[in-house]
Each structure stands twice: as structure tokens, then as C-alpha cells.
Amino acid sequence: MGLPNFILSNLRWKLVALCLAVAVWFTVRFSLVGDIRPQFLGPATESTFNAIPVQTLTMPGDQRVFQISPREVEVKIRRPGTRTDQVLSSSDINVFVNIGETTLVSGLSRVMAVQVHTPKGVEIVSLNPASVAVEQIATLPDPPPGQSLTNSLIKP
Image 1: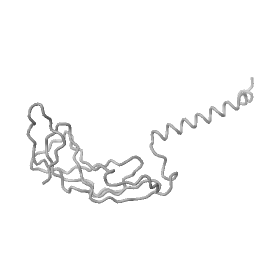
Image 2: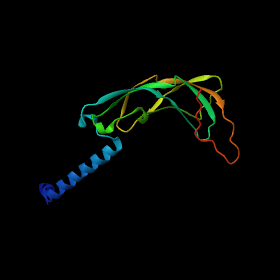
Image 3: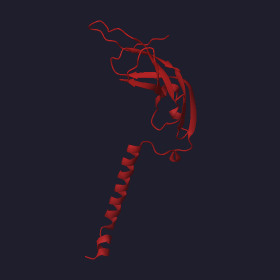
Image 4: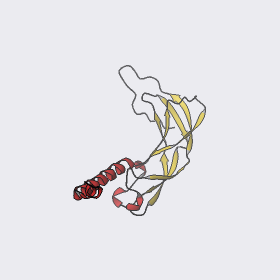
């Protein structure tokens, strides 16, 4: 069996196998990367959301109360295409400061980076301001036995 005969035998099945391999590769690649790039979906649209409140992300059971300055940020986003079924509002954009296990001394502020979580396929163009001052202003008392502290909102 010569080399040309080896290549040409069952050529149809080999082409079908190649097409299936390419299809599987595209499926895996786009599932890992996310959305198809914007050039496939049309021109990108930009939107600006003003006065989005900055939230604090803390560890479960953390009873510290924080003051953030400034309390609101401006987020400018870009998303592919102009599909009207994907209208975004400011509630679709989560802006937060990850305090986690950060130790903050009461009365002293610390500058921390603002993080933004957007829906899939949305790109953040700008964030103003990109960092905020965080100050621990109080610690809530432990709840009575048998009760737990849930979402607490303290407004100055």
C-alpha cells in the first residue's frame, strides 16, 4: 500500500471526521472563551451608568459596619451588537469593595480598589472613581443565642 493510496482510501470518512473535529474544537473554544467576538454580532454599543452605589463584600458573619467615600461610582460599558432584548439597567451591574478578611482600624480610612461584575459579554470601558476610601465606623453586637444576624442596612 503506497502513500497516495493510504491518503486517498476512505477519503469521505476522513473528511467527515475532520469536519466533526473542527466543529468540536469551535464548540469547546467558544464555551471556554464566552461570547462570540463583537465583530460577529454587529457594532458595539456603549452606555454610561451614573450613581451606582458601591457595596461591601465581607465574610459571612462579619458584623463590622463600614462607611465608603464616595458612595457611588460611574461605570461606562461596551457590549457587542444592538440587540434590544438585552437592555441593561444599573441593577445589572454590581459594584463592590472586597473587604473580606481585611483588617481595618476603627476611625482610620483605607483606600481600596472598586470591583465591577457585569453580565456575560459586557466589557468595562471606564470606572470613575476606580478606588474608594473605606472606614470601619462600628461593630454590631453579637445577636442573642438562637438568633442570627442577616442583611443589615445602616444609613447615616
